[in-house]
Length: 300
Ligand code: NAD
Ligand code: MG
Image (cartoon, rainbow, N blue to C red; front, side, top):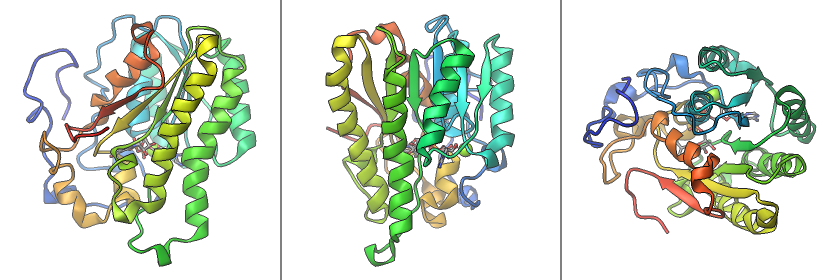
């Protein structure tokens, strides 16, 4: 389903296919993008760079698949070296991204591990600084989403794991990165439409996404005087592994994204330009902002 590139004018309602009953599928968490049908478009064939991040040093979490993969590919094609964080089980997806970054002529450093572990988060940033010679961009894209119908069935283990993955890792990574960031650096966190329009079955997940928005607004004010900007991308329904590993009930995948004004699911490739904008100097006067890329659903 590769698109032409992110510049060619076209009708956004038909730019990518709508979900069909064939989209119903299930994998074990965390899932592999390469085993999805259709395989999501993370810009592998379509994203065209134009030197907007020349020489930058970036860390992207969840860089193996979905939105993180799209951001990693775009960052590299815009001229950045990239450290990729992901889970060891996702090596097959990550290998493809490493290859694409190298084909773009940039350095790719793969550092798999579990973001629920504070030590790993600290080591990830320290290794990035060592391998790339610094850190100018931190894109926290990794996330956990598991639907549970009733609060009675939502375990403390899941509540804890969702918060550790989505909120604590962001805190630990930002804390470690800010120490090394010089003026002009950018932090981008990943929230969701769920922060404002929570699905009843995503109680824990939606709550973490609201926390990410507020954390980012507070941190943006704290580090603004250092010349570090902090912003958020808030996607709507995007076709990624997250959705087919228990993020949604399988039946809902048949018309995934159809309730948005644009009438279809988004693809990871469509999120990448938002990350590039917030990472680059083009957004020099933008901080504490949430950029909603959700197919047109009204959001605050
Ligand atoms: P994805 O499955 O491709 O990416 C999620 C990634 O998180 C995984 O690839 C994995 O590498 C990483 N991850 C999960 N648990 C981890 C752990 N314990 N340690 C290390 N890494 C871990 O799915 P995606 O949809 O691209 O998700 C990326 C982000 O986008 C998430 O924060 C998600 O909440 C957000 N988001 C997605 C959608 C959507 O519809 N797909 C909508 C709104 C927000
Ligand atoms: Mg993945």
